[in-house]
Image (cartoon, rainbow, N blue to C red; front, side, top):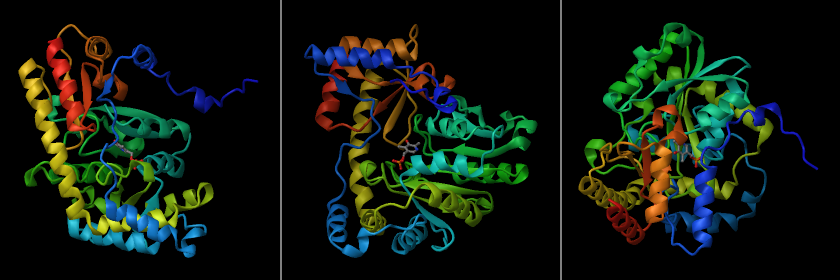
Length: 388
Ligand SMILES: *Cc1c(COP(=O)(O)O)cnc(C)c1O
């Protein structure tokens, strides 16, 4: 039997790159060695001390029972200590932190927590797709805010018309940014909080790459560093990318106590919290962040330079940023995002993500991920050089 999907699910736009996936599959079947620079999933393993802590905690029967939907006290305290040491922000572990099954879950569920059918949500374009799909599932509609290179991919608040701003309930933002890699300074977050305060909007800041940076001078700040930030919003801090923990499904949301409490109320009705042993392992990661992050950042900085070098040599222009695990690159004259991705796949067996996967404003770009070994990355670079 074929069962009819809900209208909500049917309204998800068709997957744009089915055709590219089909070509990848065929190439692999024919024995081509396909290298993917398309995946935003760290290749380096989770740090040993975190894995060891999971093993130890998994042995403790006290951790085998239902966790709280709001999170273990030990994780919330570790989160507050981390925010203090890393960002110099005071967080109340009781009322201003919640654990999540990854930021993806939190972002999707924040829509169910606050959005009524017909409500408006502001989301950047290009962006991580969940801001939009989460909103759609909850019956709301998204108004896209274009991110442009000439504004360093920052949201330009003057571009949002005042009626839309007044009506909107949530604004999503994400710096350091996927897919463009752009970072932002505290002045941008100040503007974001001010805009939210003026228009009575909840800020949802997605801090998925908050600890991936090449130098002290591009070390990211938190949205919660801004004035009025706790009054206006929350921040999703994911351990997935910064600590190589994508498979563990753990992140935290931090900030406005009323929003955190409402999100918890919703979550307590649909999930029962993350396995306590995983929460305790995450606490271990946060407690040791300085050491763990340093190693990771060395790896990404080395790989980033290799790709920049290649792009300089073959004359493709890209956004130069020491943040995130991506390089946002312009497709050459005469191509679309998708036709260029196909060309690379065809001629070099290298996969990149077409920028149009992240929204209309991503057209004309493609995204390179730094999440494969140096060796494979170099092989991919050699092949791309040969195409040009
Ligand atoms: C990877 C990513 C996430 C997902 O984080 P999880 O904590 O693994 O769910 C969220 N937002 C952005 C922008 C991402 O790139």
